[in-house]
Length: 472
Image (cartoon, rainbow, N blue to C red):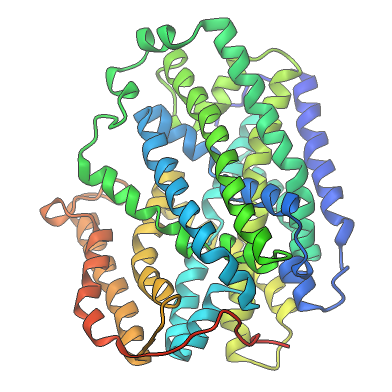
């Protein structure tokens, strides 16, 4: 990749950020002393400011993907990557967040094991593990670090792993939350100064209208309704996102969980406005680049020395704040919901640390097979959300369900989605699949549940909010 043209002061600012956030994260190195709650959930004592800071920064890590999407499709980015997520996050905050906090559990698979038994719990754990893989965030961090410092992709990949994962490897969720405070502020600072610079230097909406393709200022982006609709369904990811659950499990009280999610929506809306604006200007100013590099190239040409470095720190902070969180979640799923369930006498914290090595290896394979942030999001969301969505929603109802039917439904939904997806790749390519009847595999996975739903509930039961912890 061609290195970006940055001034020495810009490189120094980025280097100070990487080293600084690494040292801040090490504050809680080994502080958990074998305590599972401390390592995995920060002692279940997250205050409202801590909850909001870690929630906002963790959910928004796909920043180069956002730039890629806006560069390609314009305002469609906000319609598909913003609007539906606000709606589902508000529903999550009002109806689910307090109940999740009161449950006293650790992970989404805990709910599946407890409600539907071991087969469904284990299968769900595999799906959650694959859904939370940090491959897109490792891809973004490696691309950005490579472009900033002019080093090879895999050298940059190693730098990203070292400076973003090591401190959470040794300090757990406490280190994650502490670094999120700083990264939260840097995200808004970097993109805030960029928007001010763009508007004052090039003009506002009239400049964009004169220099953008017509479809970029249409909410449809020129795409068909089915493509847009599938992204709305993928936004159900909110209900199966382990990051939401982990923060709610770690919240100090049900009120903190509810208010924290709702306040986070406001910050997501503000940040979406900043990033979508930057993406539109990138397309208007530099119309012939790799879309994944839209934001880095924009920073290179639009900002002056020093402030260019601040913008790149904002980019990195947005990525690494999610990279460390998602990696912990994925490693946690491996160590606790898969490894520990097979070997109950094993050490969960140590298992989780082993999980970090597993997820890095898995991410490398995914990046080699699918080197696009948006495509990784789309593929993981398409394959695993349909299988998980129904069981997780059913968990919050007052019915008792047949475990064998729930397991079969999860497996059947995944297989139907996967088969449809593979057929699409055979008819087209990995990057541009062509689906039968132009039907997206996500819908096939959801519709396959219709075969199992009539057989799931067999009686109404009284279900309390408070579950018994899986581990004392």
